[in-house]
Image (cartoon, rainbow, N blue to C red; front, side, top):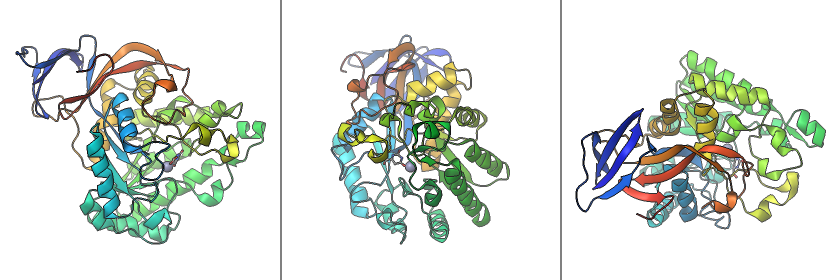
Length: 422
Ligand code: DOR
Ligand code: ZN
């Protein structure tokens, strides 16, 4: 039995009793017995374990950037009890064998739950649909060509219709390549200032609009990845109001940072979609607050130091974000006064679980014991050298946030404890 004493849950102090992978009671009177593992959670808040439905674990093929063991160790250090990993590995995850390989490696790593996302098109090349049904049967929970868009609209229509026929979500990386071509940062005053080619918001918004049209005309769901623009959020807000089955996600870096981070040619802030401007950042927060944005994901994109030391043109896009996600989100949104702690759980746990069709932690009798204990009053300075991820690439280094992950419990087992080993 695992006992969590004196945890704060929705403003109340409770004891949580866990047996196997289930919460057996939440309340005042529960007492620990001999032989139980006991966590004193005085001063800590218990939250349903976070689910990150957009991470890059890089295995197979790019293990020098990250592997399933290091990526999931980083996940539990970030308070995540489950992650869904993108298929832009080498080879691309477009066969049942590779889906099973990821599940096997995740089981060996034994950190958090891992849900493989398989490619929409073979090799993410946009030419031929993957064998979606077989991929689902092997354990894929969704489809995406993330890293690149499915540019051919007819291909995307077919993917949406086919995936909908067996109820798996399609996650689209929204980027009109013809509009983005050659750009390395957001198109705006900072790209002008630095003399760098810009990526127009039109690139993202045009592709968002295309996907909304397909979802609306064919009556099928679509999930839009890492939305970064004001215009994109407005298109999604209006589509939702019309009843279109569109859901979307955004990332901590779009709510907390602007493209001022690239000044000084800082490749750590190079990410796709690019960091935008203050009005976009404000619009992202507004979309999170009003329900337009359904999920917060990290788009955890670890890269090596050598990769990122290649200048603004040649270094790859991405931020290693899974170990700063909660603190950045909590500080910006909850401390910032935009949303409640409960709304943050919708964004980081309940909505991702619903979209992926997986069970999530619930701090109630019978609930799955995927639980994260956080200290919301503790402040820390981001230090990438402490990351469990192999990717130390973060524009958050040196910045201060509140919200320290103290324990991560997956299926009733402590998988991460900041202080002592349990
Ligand atoms: O910044 C990004 N990095 N955006 C993507 O879409 C892909 C990702 C990666 O795989 O590194
Ligand atoms: Zn992407």
